[in-house]
Image 1 (tube, protein in one colour):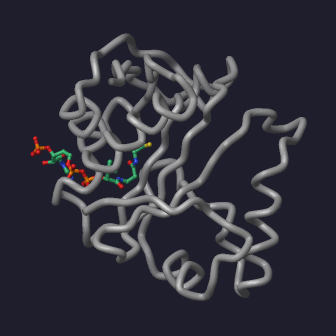
Image 2 (cartoon, protein in one colour; image 1 turned 45 degrees about the vertical axis):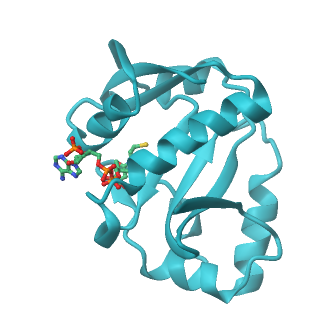
Length: 170
Ligand SMILES: CC(C)(COP(=O)(O)OP(=O)(O)OC[C@H]1O[C@@H](n2cnc3c(N)ncnc32)[C@H](O)[C@@H]1OP(=O)(O)O)[C@@H](O)C(=O)NCCC(=O)NCCS
């Protein structure tokens, strides 16, 4: 069973070990790239504290959650409850990465659907806009399997082509 735990300034060594060993990369981005230089639990907690502060550079609240399958860490998922124009054009409400050994086992789809429900239940977001690199087959399949309807394809700020979808959340 898939569950979420929000990133917390009380997170312990198990989370840091996961960040260090997990492969959460996709072409062109790493959802937890900001933790690349982090080596200690204290540094990790400080980074989590930092992520909770809005900045001029990124004034869009972003929540991070650990994804667990049967209480075992397998990935990370983010939610931007108040999407601004920049992120509407560059990523959408939800970002997700499953550690490589656990991909292709429906975990991504299960977690994505669960986050759509949470976005509606806790923030009233009924139409969830998400985006995938046009050639990210797994991400697009996950979104479509979750009820995502293709909207359009745009060029993001970094020049990449992004396929945008919207998901009607129940
Ligand atoms: C996108 C991602 C989260 C999907 O997670 P997942 O657990 O593998 O997803 P699922 O197992 O639910 O699979 C979703 C669909 O993608 C398909 N798929 C998975 N990997 C694939 C691959 N390498 N090539 C083609 N299709 C693939 C699956 O077969 C499945 O479709 P199906 O059930 O119709 O066969 C995962 O691949 C990942 O973490 N990728 C790196 C980060 C990323 O790209 N994030 C998305 C951008 S926000």
